[in-house]
Length: 453
Image 1: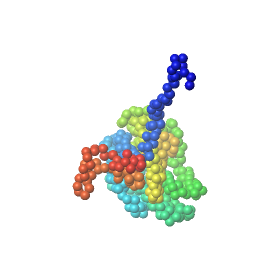
Image 2: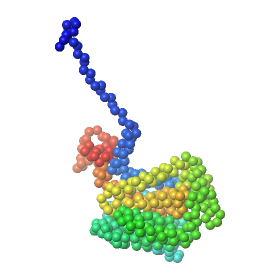
Image 3: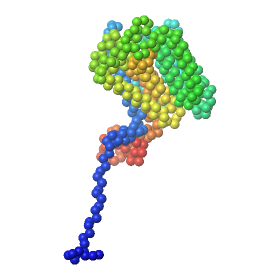
């Protein structure tokens, strides 16, 4: 190697090392998305959504029933809290039913299917007996229990159809009979049509629509072929058209879709229009709880069928979107429970309950928004009415039991530590070091694969 002018060997340049890579900054939106997805996929998500969502809807419904029913009660010379106290009593009883249903095993739910169906059919037939059945708002679908207490048996018919239909389809699936159309339709469709006939004898087409939706939901979950599904749907649609055409009241309700001002004649659209007025005057955050104007006699059925309109007026767009989000969470949780189970009865029952609550909420809210005809069905868990609240809360308890019975959810719940103190084994206290008050901590790191923390 040639030397330099000074006789020293040439100095070689130092080898440059690549600069250490700095910490990669993760997109905060992506990190939020991944965290939300991880939380959403936990095994107890459906359990918490059903329990928390139904509780929030019920509590908010009690508040709105108290607000929306005060003027109606005073106009009837009753105390202002009259309807609220009745709804609160129904909610307490419904809470007991929810707790019982959530603790019952699946086998006991299946055992109740046939007695519940027989009882519902008996009560629905009893409605048509003169002197026993009574008419409310033109519909002969009520039985008086004495005093101001009444019961609507058709509401319990929804729950009976869900449980009985789920048990029937599950037994036929176990015997591999659902690939034959006659076993898929018989006796499910004839029994459902019998219930529909008993309901339509009283003129309650709104409840009949919900029952039809439950029937189609069960057939869809059972894997009915498209042509068979379309055939049954066409028959039901033809019957519905005939029933609407032959009733001036139903034709008037159909003519009020999209109405923005009252009309003259049979279809005056007073209720539909004032429901729109209530929603329009609420703005983003509403006029304030209790400050509704439409409930002062302008809006009929403000605390029952049109309670969503009063909610929009007093709580605004924020309140109505919150209610919609809670129902969407319930619907998602129900679909998740039905999709992740391996028990056919649980799948059919969860799908039937989800179809029932979702369809009834869509029909009620669609009527208030002027997008659907007024069907006279309450908003589930929200509107005033004990007959509708009790079977719905029992169905929610059913869903909670199903969500908790998932294998991953059972494993996650079994990993919980006792809430206070240390765990006892054989009557002696095992010393595990300092007491930990974080009751949600995992006891074994191997159990983290389930996703629950």
